[in-house]
Image (tube, rainbow, N blue to C red; front, side, top):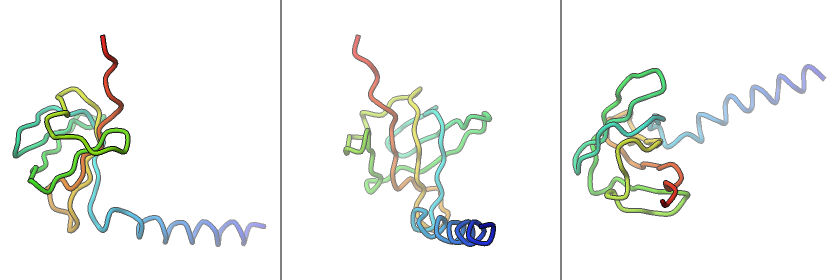
Amino acid sequence: MNKVFMTALLALAITVPALAHEGGHHVKGVIKELTPERLVLTEAKGRDVAFSVTKATEFFREGKPVKREDAKPGERAVVHGAAGGGTTAAEVMLGAAPAAH
């Protein structure tokens, strides 16, 4: 039983990094700043992480494409960096839409 568990764990450890966004990194946090060229997220530990925003950067909310202008400071987001470990945002996944008042 222990041997089967260890084999499954090893397979998972090998597979998960291969499924990561083509070598790019991701950062979770709250949008601190957003301009047409730059996005800054504040992580849970308080560290600010800046990304370049380009025409190729895609924004999504609940799995559907949205415009960059739909993202607002104070919103939770996950930014997927471009492959190669650069600081260009490839995708920005926004949290659920704020409730209407």
